[in-house]
Length: 354
Image (cartoon, rainbow, N blue to C red; front, side, top):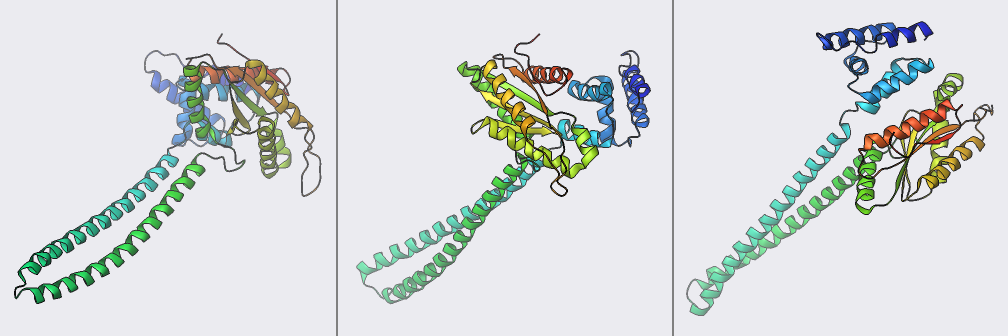
């Protein structure tokens, strides 16, 4: 993408909000897709419409970063933006499906237990009639004895059958619970790195912020981004880029240790939550990560060729009790941007709202 395209993008970035603004935003979105050779799919249109209208500030900021830096704006970027900001509720559907299956299995088990209760009631009624006839010792006694024997044998058969059915239902419920746990794990895990994904991180961030607000302890957020990752992909290919992502993810996890949540947020971006950490402690943790990554040796396994030094930039922000979480995330993002602007391989912090 050349500088002319960048300049023309910015010229069209904010249509006036007069008259039929929606039409203006739609025209600008279509023009942008044509300019960058991006297919006009509904997903791509939504991204560009939100960029021009400003309805999704984070989408606008991500795209603006690529435009300002001259990085390619292509369909791969569109996929990453859509996956990050517009991801459909596939995971929720997995939970709903598994929950419905468990509910169905439980309904069958309850029916089986109810049937067992009904059988026991019927057998109890027979026993009561037999007990009454014993006192009378009338002509009905032989018939009641035969009936009692039949009922006892029938109840034994039904109990054996129900025992097997209930055992099968219990096994089915156990299997469904394991499927649900696996679906939950898959829905909250990044497949490539094995770290928690964005959804899991955002859920944990909400809980951590609530606890920090209630208990009054500190909380810090790190957002990290591998420097010049596109160059790695372009030079060595995406399989090598994926290996770098996994290695960096392992390094981040090793530096933070147990009990600290680190996640892959998408692309080459990672995040970490540091409960109870002061800003100074969070900066030190970020510096350990930055230094550990820069000291790693990266090479192509198949050829042994050296990739050179891989570096990471990190933004640090301290949570202000009760503030909206998007403000915390934005400060960490701004700090990350400052680290990038300072020639990368840096840690920068933004403790308080400006």
